[in-house]
Image (cartoon, rainbow, N blue to C red; front, top):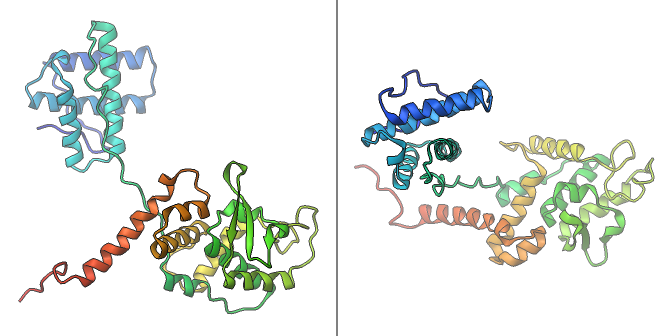
Length: 319
């Protein structure tokens, strides 16, 4: 049975020249080259994907485009999926086949497009990287009381305490902070504001920074909660570099970035509370579906606990 070619490879074997399907595909490729004037690279992709379809149909003893049914296209895609081809590559091949059948409809009055309703398998959603609570504790251990260290500690503690986005933290002004109530007003995506609690440890770190915060040199920086060594509002790039540097100083095995601290905040909050709606509000997500990715992280944690603790989950040692 035929299958999609592996992505990034070029099949040297010619398409079966004897079949009506192969002849129609060559007509379509000529049209793409001469009329649409597609680039050689794009044309090569079309050729590779459609030759895969020809090979599959040959294995099914289908030799004419009009004989291909939707079920055949589904089987073609399913076979590729079982062989481990990426969903994006399958989707590209399906797109090429749709274009081919659309061409057949215009040129040969073949009205039915068997690939129209067929979709590639969904890509597995990439889970965000997080730190576990012990890693967070190690990361947030600062061994200096310098002005820069106090600022960096306040920044990192606030990321983890309140789950801020990088842009939200950069834009913070001193007036956004209610030190008495330990509350913070944040302006997020879509210019929407939300009020967030600040943990006592983060509040202590912010107070320590404000006690030594240097004078500023610009009007904007005069109001900024966090400033750079040059007396300006601290930039996103500067924060990213400082967060990464602290990871290396604390001996982390991976690079730490601001969003990793936000992800860790969300994952730990959900793991402890189980309140998805509350975590959604804290993160400033417009749709709860965005927040639900952290439930997968929670299930990963539960699965590890189960595998290590349940008697029937453990593999038996060989005698």
